[in-house]
Amino acid sequence: MDTKKVAKLFKALSNPNRLELYFKIAEMHESSFQTDCECFVSDIISSLNIGAPTISHHIKELVNADLISTEKKGKFLICRVNEELVEEVSKLLSLQHK
Image (cartoon, rainbow, N blue to C red):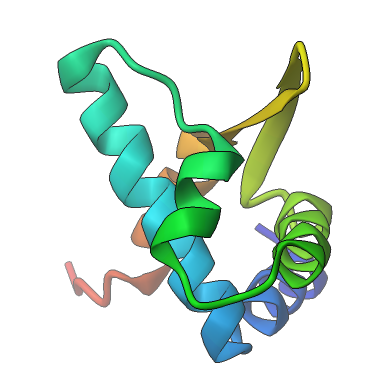
């Protein structure tokens, strides 16, 4: 993973509201595997104390950093965590020495 991509990723997560939003998306993404539901932005909005336009901006930033992907389903927006990137970052951050 190149340093520009890593810097972009960490910059996207440096905003406390955006980080909280990412954690909510990740939490709902995880539970969606167990309940066979999807992570709708409308559900996230109701659980955070942030306005919809601000959440929309933060979602764009997370998508731009490749942390999440979105999909329109009718009038609803669905968010998915980029699991491949999570795995890459996890490997990058693990400071295991051989």
